Length: 181
Image (cartoon, helix red, strand yellow):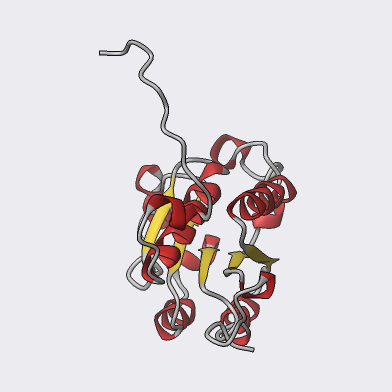
């Protein structure tokens, strides 16, 4: 069943793909001064919790192999509404990932835990960026949740949500002014 054929019940919920590239399975152990102490399992838990909060489904996959990441985009091409990818080391070399992101009919957001602009020359210029809808980086594990939240909003808005409440699929309460000037 493709995304346009889903019924409007629970099976019709928006569905997103989150892909983690090479060596992301070593988060929490690898260069913690750059990537932090949080593990990939911790990040995945945060993404799943956010998906639940936003009322959407999420498929999460990690691979150290370029072809597996490309296959994930292609195998879910008619089943998902958007994707997030941390291409990691493939950011700087994978024309094939760039091309599949351009080929799929849904928006993809690139994420990185570190701020690539502050990295060494090898890690500054992602070729994936030109194919992605946007890029979130430099926020540590929060790069994923910021990107996920933005992607859900983008997809809901593109499907005709005409209010903030419709984008979030729930009423939004206004905060009160607490004497701030």
